[in-house]
Amino acid sequence: MKLVYFAWVRERVGKAEEVVDLPAGLATVSDLLAWLRGRGEEYAHAFEGEGVVRVAIDRVHAKPDAPISGAAEIAFFPPMTGG
Image (cartoon, rainbow, N blue to C red; front, side):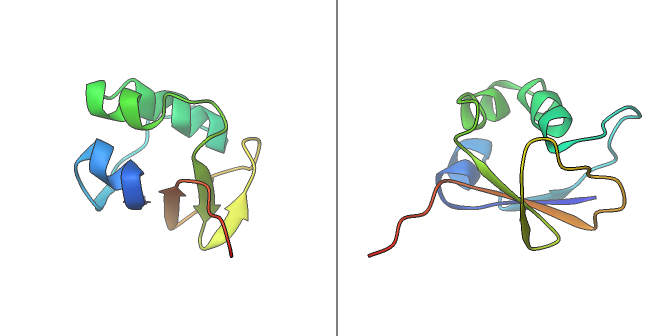
């Protein structure tokens, strides 16, 4: 699965994107975020605030309980503001 990181999420993780093989048992966005936090200090820092980082599955905004099965790309980005 392709993971894409934007803005300060990218800066904290240290890369713009990566392709990963997810372990069995990850079913939702929330599961994925928990797994990412355990991948190292940089990931823990990027995803430390519950509900802060926004997620899009195949370019569609997703909530924490959204299923990730079958997704080609999951993107992570900070909250956006308009104006």
